[in-house]
Image (tube, each protein chain N blue to C red):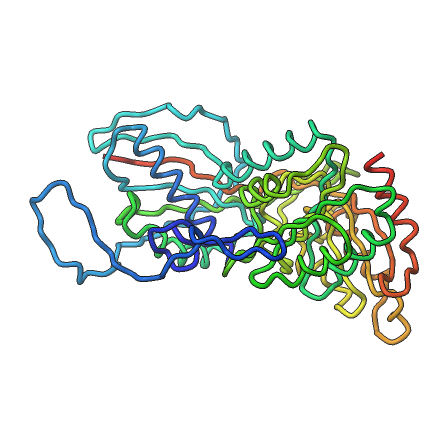
Length: 296
Length: 113
C-alpha cells in the first residue's frame, strides 16, 4: 500500500544518481477507487457505511513485569468462534530483518556505515562535503542522501567528489532499511570504504528505523535549543555519537555547551561527543582522526 | 507521521498470518505498544483507520495493550517506572539507567475465521 495516500500501489520513493531522471515505475497517480472483493455473494451491500467500524479500543495497562515468553509463530488455539493465532511478532521485524542483511553485507565488505540524523539545517550535508574534500586521499567515500524532494544534496556531494545516490522519499519522513538495501546496490559500494547515509532531516521518525548502520550519529547545531536532547530523547537515546556543530557561533548565541551534553547524557550515558565547526574547521581534526580509525 | 508506516506493517503482518492459517479475515487483533516505543497511540489509531481499509483487518476489533516503561538503575539496581527518557533513578538520583521494558511494538495475537 502507498504510505502517501493509502491506495493500493506500493509506496513511491525514487533512487537516482545525479543527472538521472525518475524512472517510470515509481510514478503512480493517487486516485481512490475502492473495489471490495466479496467471495461470498450473500450480502450485496452499498459502501455508504464508510468506516464506522466499531473501533472499541481497549487500553489495558500492564503493571506486572511483562514476562513475554516467546511463543513460536505457528502456535494456534482452536476456539468455537474461530482460531486464535499467537503472532508475537515485532511490528518492525521486516525492517529489522533487512537492516540486519544490510549490516551483514557491510561487514563482509568491510564497509563502515554511518547514519546521520538531525533536524533540518544542522549542517549534515556540509559536514559530509567538507569531510570528502579533506579526507578523500585516505578514505573511500560513498554517500546516500535522503530528502523528501530534490537532487540538491546529491549534486553538492557529487561536486565535492564522491559517488552518491539520492533517495527521494516523496512524502515519507524517514529512510528505511529497504531503501538503503536498494540504494547500496545502485551505488556499487567497494570493499574497505566509508558509507555515509544522510537521513531525512527530522529528529523524530528516523529514530525507529534501523538501516543496518555501524554507528548512528546525531548532529545538533548551537543555534538550536540546548534542551533538544530531552525534547527529542528517542533520537538521542538511539544514537552512538553526538556532533555539536557551528561552534564558531557560540559567542553570538545563548547556548550552553555543557548543558546540552548534560541533557544528552541524561538520556544516553553512552553518547560520545565531537564539538566542531564545519565552517571554520575548528575541531574537525578530532572527527577526521576518529573517521580514519574506523575505516583503517 | 511514522505511525502510518507502523500501521501498514501491522496490516502486512496480519495479512501474512491470516494467509498462513488459511483464514479469510481477522475479527480481533491484539497489539502491545510500549509507552517509550516512540509511537503516539492516538496517531497510530488514526493511521490504522486508513491502513486497514480493504485489508483482512477491515472490521477487526483492535485491542491495544500499553506496556508501562520501566528502567533499572545501573548504580543501585532499583527498578522503577519511567514517564520520560531523561529522569534519574528516584532512589539514588543516578542518570545511568537502562530501559528494561516499554520499547515494545508487537502484534501479539490475531483471532481469525
